[in-house]
Picture 1 (cartoon, helix red, strand yellow):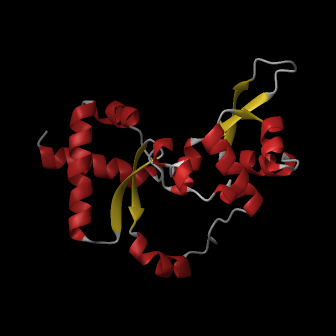
Picture 2: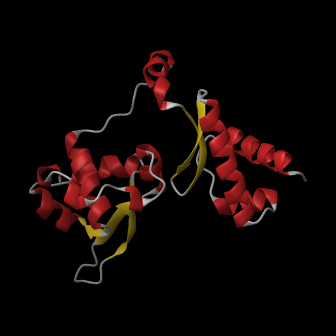
Length: 174
Protein backbone atom coordinates (compact mmCIF):
# COMPACT_ATOMS: atom_id res chain seq x y z
CA UNK A 1 0.00 0.00 0.00
CA UNK A 2 1.41 3.42 -0.92
CA UNK A 3 2.23 5.98 1.78
CA UNK A 4 -0.69 8.33 0.97
CA UNK A 5 -3.17 5.43 1.22
CA UNK A 6 -1.65 4.37 4.55
CA UNK A 7 -2.11 7.90 5.90
CA UNK A 8 -5.68 7.90 4.58
CA UNK A 9 -6.37 4.62 6.42
CA UNK A 10 -4.95 5.98 9.68
CA UNK A 11 -6.99 9.16 9.23
CA UNK A 12 -10.19 7.13 8.67
CA UNK A 13 -9.56 5.08 11.82
CA UNK A 14 -9.07 8.25 13.87
CA UNK A 15 -12.14 9.89 12.34
CA UNK A 16 -14.52 7.06 13.26
CA UNK A 17 -13.03 6.33 16.70
CA UNK A 18 -14.17 9.46 18.55
CA UNK A 19 -11.53 8.86 21.22
CA UNK A 20 -7.73 8.59 21.38
CA UNK A 21 -6.44 5.51 19.57
CA UNK A 22 -3.27 3.92 20.93
CA UNK A 23 -0.32 2.78 18.84
CA UNK A 24 -1.14 -0.79 19.84
CA UNK A 25 -4.68 -0.47 18.46
CA UNK A 26 -3.41 1.20 15.27
CA UNK A 27 -0.87 -1.62 14.77
CA UNK A 28 -3.61 -4.19 15.33
CA UNK A 29 -6.01 -2.53 12.86
CA UNK A 30 -3.46 -1.83 10.11
CA UNK A 31 -0.61 -4.29 10.48
CA UNK A 32 1.84 -1.38 10.16
CA UNK A 33 4.93 -1.25 12.38
CA UNK A 34 5.18 1.14 15.33
CA UNK A 35 7.90 3.13 13.58
CA UNK A 36 5.91 3.41 10.37
CA UNK A 37 2.79 4.56 12.26
CA UNK A 38 4.83 7.15 14.16
CA UNK A 39 6.33 8.49 10.94
CA UNK A 40 2.96 8.61 9.16
CA UNK A 41 1.26 10.29 12.12
CA UNK A 42 3.94 13.00 12.23
CA UNK A 43 3.37 13.64 8.53
CA UNK A 44 -0.40 13.78 9.02
CA UNK A 45 -0.10 16.14 12.00
CA UNK A 46 2.16 18.45 9.97
CA UNK A 47 -0.29 18.43 7.06
CA UNK A 48 -3.16 19.41 9.34
CA UNK A 49 -1.08 22.19 10.96
CA UNK A 50 0.08 23.58 7.60
CA UNK A 51 -3.48 23.57 6.28
CA UNK A 52 -4.58 25.71 9.26
CA UNK A 53 -8.08 24.24 9.05
CA UNK A 54 -10.64 23.38 11.67
CA UNK A 55 -9.21 19.96 12.52
CA UNK A 56 -5.86 18.98 14.01
CA UNK A 57 -4.19 15.68 14.85
CA UNK A 58 -3.20 15.56 18.51
CA UNK A 59 -1.32 13.12 20.73
CA UNK A 60 -3.65 12.73 23.69
CA UNK A 61 -3.99 10.15 26.48
CA UNK A 62 -1.19 7.95 25.15
CA UNK A 63 -2.82 7.84 21.72
CA UNK A 64 -3.82 9.90 18.71
CA UNK A 65 -7.07 11.77 18.11
CA UNK A 66 -8.55 14.18 15.61
CA UNK A 67 -9.56 17.33 17.51
CA UNK A 68 -11.08 20.67 16.66
CA UNK A 69 -8.73 23.62 16.28
CA UNK A 70 -8.74 25.52 19.61
CA UNK A 71 -8.78 28.75 17.60
CA UNK A 72 -12.51 28.13 17.04
CA UNK A 73 -13.46 27.05 20.57
CA UNK A 74 -15.68 30.08 21.29
CA UNK A 75 -17.77 29.52 18.16
CA UNK A 76 -17.94 25.75 18.70
CA UNK A 77 -19.20 26.21 22.26
CA UNK A 78 -22.07 28.31 20.93
CA UNK A 79 -23.08 25.48 18.61
CA UNK A 80 -22.66 22.64 21.05
CA UNK A 81 -25.69 21.49 23.03
CA UNK A 82 -23.35 19.91 25.56
CA UNK A 83 -22.23 22.41 28.18
CA UNK A 84 -18.52 22.66 28.87
CA UNK A 85 -17.50 20.14 31.51
CA UNK A 86 -16.47 21.97 34.63
CA UNK A 87 -14.78 20.80 37.78
CA UNK A 88 -15.20 22.35 41.20
CA UNK A 89 -12.20 23.83 42.96
CA UNK A 90 -12.26 20.87 45.36
CA UNK A 91 -12.22 18.44 42.42
CA UNK A 92 -9.35 20.31 40.73
CA UNK A 93 -7.38 20.41 43.97
CA UNK A 94 -7.94 16.69 44.52
CA UNK A 95 -6.99 15.84 40.93
CA UNK A 96 -3.80 17.89 41.17
CA UNK A 97 -2.77 16.12 44.36
CA UNK A 98 -3.50 12.69 42.90
CA UNK A 99 -1.78 13.50 39.58
CA UNK A 100 1.43 14.64 41.24
CA UNK A 101 1.55 12.19 44.16
CA UNK A 102 -0.01 9.04 42.75
CA UNK A 103 -0.55 6.46 43.93
CA UNK A 104 -1.94 7.67 47.24
CA UNK A 105 -4.61 6.67 49.74
CA UNK A 106 -7.71 8.59 50.75
CA UNK A 107 -6.16 9.17 54.20
CA UNK A 108 -3.04 10.69 52.62
CA UNK A 109 -5.24 12.83 50.36
CA UNK A 110 -7.40 13.98 53.30
CA UNK A 111 -4.29 14.89 55.28
CA UNK A 112 -2.90 16.98 52.42
CA UNK A 113 -6.23 18.72 51.75
CA UNK A 114 -7.17 19.11 55.41
CA UNK A 115 -10.76 17.99 54.73
CA UNK A 116 -12.69 14.78 54.05
CA UNK A 117 -12.53 13.87 50.35
CA UNK A 118 -15.26 11.20 50.16
CA UNK A 119 -17.66 13.16 47.94
CA UNK A 120 -14.97 14.53 45.65
CA UNK A 121 -13.38 11.11 45.19
CA UNK A 122 -16.75 9.57 44.39
CA UNK A 123 -17.41 12.24 41.75
CA UNK A 124 -13.97 11.84 40.16
CA UNK A 125 -14.39 8.05 40.11
CA UNK A 126 -17.81 8.42 38.44
CA UNK A 127 -16.31 10.71 35.79
CA UNK A 128 -13.48 8.17 35.33
CA UNK A 129 -10.82 10.83 35.91
CA UNK A 130 -9.31 8.68 38.67
CA UNK A 131 -9.34 4.98 39.47
CA UNK A 132 -8.28 2.51 42.12
CA UNK A 133 -4.79 1.36 41.14
CA UNK A 134 -4.18 -1.09 43.98
CA UNK A 135 -3.98 -1.46 47.73
CA UNK A 136 -1.27 -0.13 50.00
CA UNK A 137 0.88 -2.66 51.82
CA UNK A 138 -0.06 -1.35 55.28
CA UNK A 139 -2.58 -2.25 57.99
CA UNK A 140 -6.11 -2.22 56.63
CA UNK A 141 -4.79 -2.36 53.03
CA UNK A 142 -6.29 1.02 52.02
CA UNK A 143 -7.10 1.68 48.37
CA UNK A 144 -4.58 3.57 46.26
CA UNK A 145 -5.81 6.13 43.71
CA UNK A 146 -4.28 7.28 40.45
CA UNK A 147 -5.30 9.14 37.30
CA UNK A 148 -6.73 7.53 34.17
CA UNK A 149 -6.44 7.87 30.40
CA UNK A 150 -9.71 9.84 30.62
CA UNK A 151 -7.86 12.33 32.88
CA UNK A 152 -5.21 12.73 30.16
CA UNK A 153 -7.89 13.15 27.49
CA UNK A 154 -9.89 15.65 29.58
CA UNK A 155 -6.84 17.89 30.03
CA UNK A 156 -5.40 17.28 26.54
CA UNK A 157 -2.21 15.64 27.79
CA UNK A 158 -0.19 13.04 25.92
CA UNK A 159 1.02 11.54 29.20
CA UNK A 160 1.80 12.59 32.78
CA UNK A 161 5.22 13.93 31.79
CA UNK A 162 3.36 16.87 30.18
CA UNK A 163 2.10 18.06 33.57
CA UNK A 164 3.72 21.36 34.56
CA UNK A 165 6.74 21.05 36.84
CA UNK A 166 5.63 21.35 40.47
CA UNK A 167 8.33 23.98 41.05
CA UNK A 168 6.66 26.20 38.43
CA UNK A 169 3.27 26.02 40.12
CA UNK A 170 1.98 28.34 42.79
CA UNK A 171 2.39 26.38 46.08
CA UNK A 172 -1.14 27.46 47.05
CA UNK A 173 -2.50 25.71 43.93
CA UNK A 174 -1.82 22.31 45.45
